[in-house]
Image (tube, rainbow, N blue to C red; front, side, top):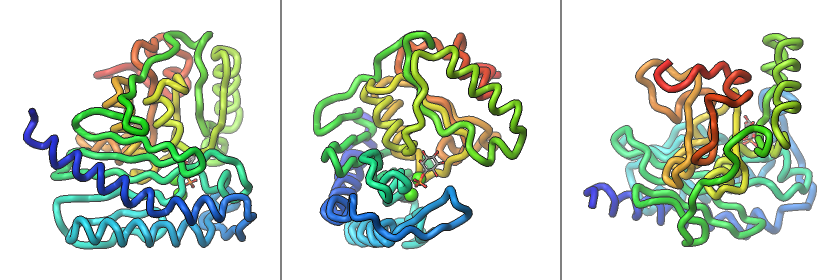
Length: 275
Ligand code: IPD
Ligand code: CA
Ligand code: CA
């Protein structure tokens, strides 16, 4: 066994603890129409529950991994200066959570010495715990296998593309690309949580996912879930030699899906591995 596996399993267990610690609060607050504050713009909501859930997660992580660094969406970079880095999104899918749509999650990823080693996506509404370690990927303790459609015409693709930012870069072209997706895929969805969508790709409940502007806390856990379940995660437009979870875009799909022959490759300007 790879010597790093036990440590990675342990970190995944700690991430599970931290994610679950937010469960009661998030379930109680869900469908209470919490007040919404805006961060960057009208498309970037936050509630008191995002901030409180992140606090809870930070406490659990600090207790079990003192000295670790925590990079959280709401609180920024905190903790110590060790080799262990946590990426925390206390609620991924805040717009859904705030309005009462049951598609949001807690996402916690861990990188040790520059390698992603553990990730947890927790769906508090369904009480589904998706866990990735160097040992594999599970949903509620059951191994996951990322399998599904092999071609666009039978596939469900989930994306937030085009975002308002994508439209600002070239409206006509972005809408043309979106139209290509709608025509080519069996089904196009905008579920609103990158992390939970990636967990679903890992489980084989969604075939393809694409996002053009995300942060490490959105996708660190989901990236590992997809890869450990046998699916494909391609970082897009990252710095040369940079970490995959720092890249601002991604394409993900179930094992066996024809990515090179898919319209999504064209939409994402993906020329294929090694290009
Ligand atoms: C957002 C969701 C959404 C993605 C955005 C993220 P938030 O996260 O993951 O699916 O397209 O880029 O910002 O704001 O709900 O934590
Ligand atoms: Ca997010
Ligand atoms: Ca968030």
